[in-house]
Image (tube, rainbow, N blue to C red; front, side, top):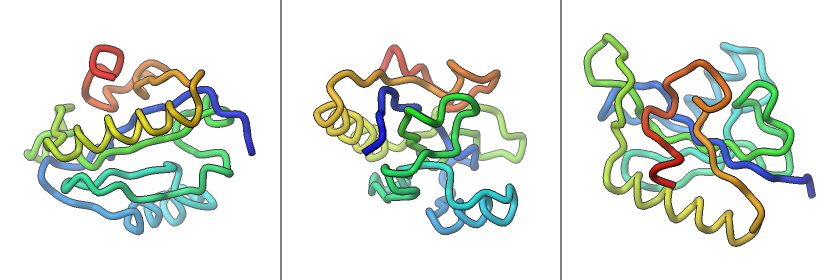
Length: 135
């Protein structure tokens, strides 16, 4: 098993209220970016259901320079419903509950793990909320 010391939280940067699937994101990453698979290990849908993306045993492709020792979690949303794509915390109550449960479960498996937002390592608004304050 690979050494994991970070969880990095992302948003899909998709409009509020529009659901997308692991398969759609996988298509963006494989056919759009030329990657071997979806970059995230987990994706949280609007209804709070948690879906596996890339296996945990494989290094993700979600945060340049930080993939080797991390788990990438992405929630669907992160920008307003307008087509302007302004960063906004669009998480549904179900997504907030699911994200907390997933992070807590992973902390139980990896007690030394730290939790971060993508914006802590990249000049991006992603995940559109303050991970350090909330998680």
